[in-house]
Image (cartoon, rainbow, N blue to C red; front, side):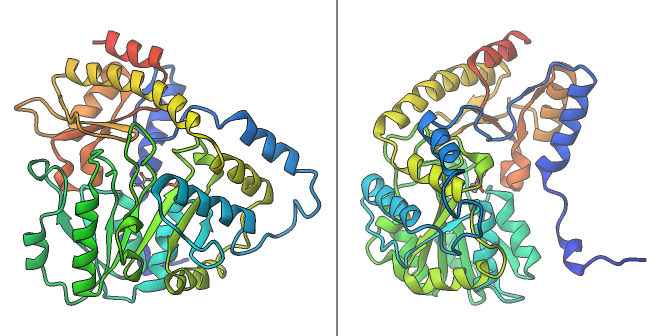
Length: 381
Ligand SMILES: Cc1ncc(COP(=O)(O)O)c(C=O)c1O
């Protein structure tokens, strides 16, 4: 009898991993599934990016192990991307670490900074991986509420009332997933001050700042943020490269070095061709974002119509890749609501509850579905 590690008692299979299996099963039975669940861009990267990876295949060393810190030109591309889009200066030699996906970075960071029993502040609602990784490393999730009444931003009075003595890390992410709340530089400044006061490592998870958002922001824009903060960013949504697995973590040399210590013991570098493609993507000009956003804007209009047809109230201020909507009055369970739609109309929408109990009463639509399909979903009601 092979026994499992104790850490497996504290995590469950990722919601999408099991739910998408069910959705695939329904599709294989012939159901005309429209999947508005997961935020995996259906659009392609630019042709230049695809050409870069194809051409890279013939380069000398293309198939060898790569540097643990990524190609210098990749780190330079990331530094330029931060300078040009957020006005943040980073030293590509020591303040940037390319990641094989930013989700993976959540584990690297947690392994680098958390001991068993440390507490971790996690937004509710928020990305479920913060909780599962915290549990996997034996630390303790402590949730902080985000509420619609407070525009999905933390309540600092409530934060100060928590027992912060064991808190080591605070996760946040603006633009916020799943709600789409934008955040602001004032909010970031308050968070940096809070983190400094309580000696907490603050990490902004920032994969959505270029989708339907005219003001991309970085936590690192706040003066002095690097003393206590890291930022994760990702090419997944910005450049339609989710399956490529390219992300980055940015911050002071000391913090980045700690993450590298973990990461260099876990992988042996990112595939060369992917790095070359990523360099090309990072050098895209502004028209790339405009072209993508034209498509997403049309999809958003239709998706809002769908949500409203279902009697839901859309969070109109939301930015990013999702539409976040409140269930009709009198309907309480997000999971029952989405299951009924899945089984009766073959449309898969994400229940807000997978992001925490403050997501109860809400649902999330991804904008990764072509306009015709969103229209078809509308027509099914
Ligand atoms: C808030 C948030 N953080 C991180 C990720 C992971 O992105 P990546 O593809 O870079 O691992 C996602 C992906 O859905 C996300 O929604």
